Image (cartoon, rainbow, N blue to C red; front, side):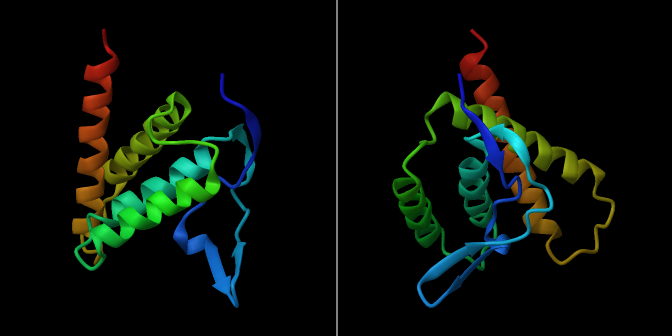
Length: 131
């Protein structure tokens, strides 16, 4: 069973500010209560999705993911709670992609790649745990 607590619910790089060695999280407009796995999973997956954008360094993002999880300390990608949070995240990505009618956005290719990554992971997850 996963623990329940308050969660940011949009814990991603665009809501984190670093200044003079201090880190602050901003924008709690989506705050609610739920699985403690959701915020770290969401942040880790946001970094994973950035690997779909050629302007980011995949090795650097992988190191950032590893350091984040080591520092966070409460969850790892192989944990069942992380998998459940990733299912929710991946479904949200796919639903966003399906509903995105604005094909002129500059990040359309990135958004399609991240949706495909989410879809492929969901297929893998379903096949692995269908037994």
